[in-house]
Structures are given as C-alpha cells and as structure tokens.
Length: 86
Image (cartoon, rainbow, N blue to C red):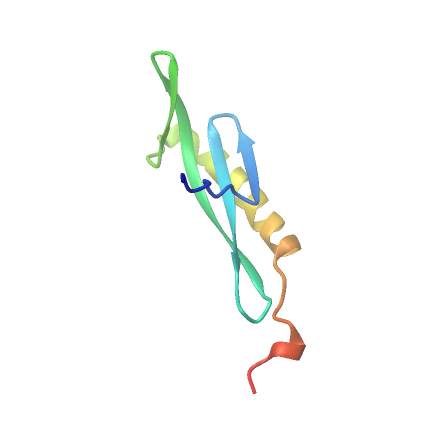
C-alpha cells in the first residue's frame, strides 16, 4: 500500500517564491511549525523548485519569510499544562 504524502499546514506564495509550513506535533500537546522556502521555475512544460535564489528574488524571499513567521506565531500551540513535565 502506498504511503500518503504529508501535506503542509499552509503555503504562502508571492510571485515565484513559496513557503511551505509544516506542523510538528509533540507528545505534550504542543504544535510547532517550520518552513521550507523554494523558488518556482518552469523547465519546458514542467514546473520545478529550487532552493537557490537569485539576487532579484531576495526581496520576495523576505516578504514570504515574514508572512510565514506571522502565520506560525498565530498557529503554534503551547504545551498542554496538564501534561507538563513532572
């Protein structure tokens, strides 16, 4: 049986720059997020992703990074106080 591919909790895109935000659930109930940033480009008829950014991409990397940071602050979940370390 094929394993289902994990999907990001959110994606933020501006132009050719995209952040995928991933949720990490912990045993104590906390949820923390991390992000991956890519540049989208077309190679023939196919869309591809690169983690290499051109000089002119960097302002959008900054914008997307700031938006991802704000989203993560709003959606991170603190540890459940009932399950805190004893």
